[in-house]
Length: 119
Image (cartoon, rainbow, N blue to C red; front, side):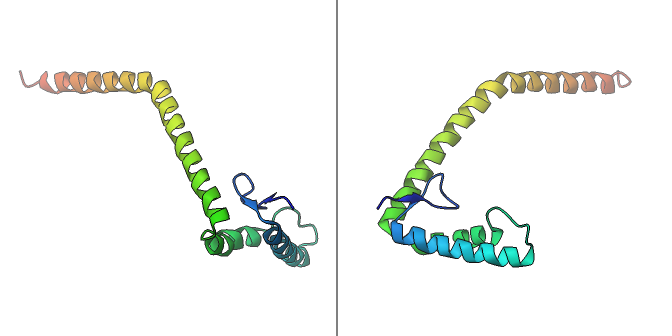
């Protein structure tokens, strides 16, 4: 049987078949509880998302299958952050230089204005 995307972390984490079934059962129980409170409820139950973040993930990160996926995702995020930082620096670099020139001009002019009466 194939691994399936995790219902909450599906953009980076795939689950082993037995885990997928247990997660689905838990998700459906949270959905059923949400439907009891609000019959028009739809979507991912927030309590299930919270449970996945605070209970399921910490309990499963020690398993190689999930640890390796988390490590790969962390490396991918680091790469994306680095690329974004470079793009920000390229786009903002000229604006920052212009801002710095204006700050210097404002300081210089304010100093000149403050010293007019002193001379």
